[in-house]
Amino acid sequence: MPDLINARVGRWREHLATASDGRAWLRLFVVVFPVFLLTAHYAMVSVDTSSAFIPAWHLVHHGNLWLEGMRHPPYWSVHAGGHLVSNREPGVILANVPAYLILYPLGPVALGGALTAAVLTAATVATLYVVVRRLGSPDVALATALVAAFGTSLWSIASAEIWTHTVDALCLALAMLFLTRSGYLAAGAIIGVSAMARPHLIVVAAVLGLYLAFHRRSPRPAVAVGVGGAPGFASLLLLNHAVYGSWTLSGYGSYVTQNLTTSGGAAAHGGAWASAGHYLSNATGFLLSPLCGLLLYLPIALLLIAGLRPAWRAAPAWCRGMLLGGVAYTLVQLKINSYVGGAAFYGYRLATELVVCACPLAVFAYTQWGAQTLWRTNAAKSLAVASVVIQAVGVTLYPIARSAPVKPWRSDFVAAYGNSSLVATIIIAGGIAATLLWCARDRSRNPSAAHAAACAGQSGVQPARRATATAAS
Image (cartoon, rainbow, N blue to C red; front, side, top):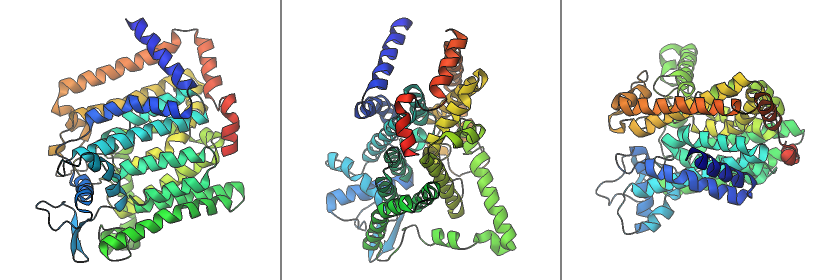
């Protein structure tokens, strides 16, 4: 039986590797979508996400976003222009509309939002696979896509409910797909659309365009990305004006603009030094907090840090530009609000866009650094499995209903483990076994030949795909 399973998996991988981009995209989508559908949240959803899908249902049934007639309007509702409206961004509301058209006979239930989240996130994973496959080895692309699907917040956040991150992740992945073919105008247009769900993502487009212009010693990439992004950004302003009656980037209220343009409450009690200390504390929590620290809940990120230098030299310019854009976006995000990001979810949330932006460069960190020696390869595999285990424990066991009040130094992972220590231990044991089998698989072959082949095939871009990556750089 194990031999039969291995043979079938091997044939599937071979067919996936040789399929066209479209067929490969569909095959991976079909694999991850059922898992996302199974683990999505259909009850006890966050007030953040219900405040996005309820207006979509209302738009489908009543043709407007005026919610004052609802018996139970969304939690995040504000009075604007004489009406009661949700303060969620238009992009995430509109993303739910197709699902509620399909589910027209039903009321404003969470099912539509869950279906939308599962579909969009599965599409994100499939798109990331195609992106990475264009950069190099299909095997590395498959491993990257599966770790992105089940080892990051794409599983616990983006696929579980219809957050703004659900829409953003797909838009960023699509933008990178066009960047592999030097499609700067299209990439800018898609990032502009993503700003309709999370306005400060326009920072990614700005940094990407400027970096590509600097790298190419030409303003053309910056102009193309900027011109492409302008319609989406303009649409955000127009839609918000129609809903709120004013030219605004967000319906969230004044706290966003106040936090961006002032030093915040910390400065009121200690000036610039207090403000800087507050920001540093926020950034530290973003990376290291037991509640949602990125490095604790995504240990595979350590691979990018360790292999950043060789990856930076080998990767196409757009990969570097996307990482810089993701970092700049995150710095702005940490200025806007706390790294915690609220309650009723597991692990980190606000780092989702950074994770997607960093994905292509992380691949080069593995091929240029991790795959060069056996211990690094095994370490990378161990970190990848650890990331999946951490997400699996949270997705299956985390008590969403008991996540509030938020305690920044409480561990979400420990809370999930305590909810069912037996199941969590089984998941962890399975992760350890998977790591040992994965690492031992190569050693069971001719070790020197297997490692030489790994270094040759993974240390850069495969010859058949080298021209594409070179052109995109």
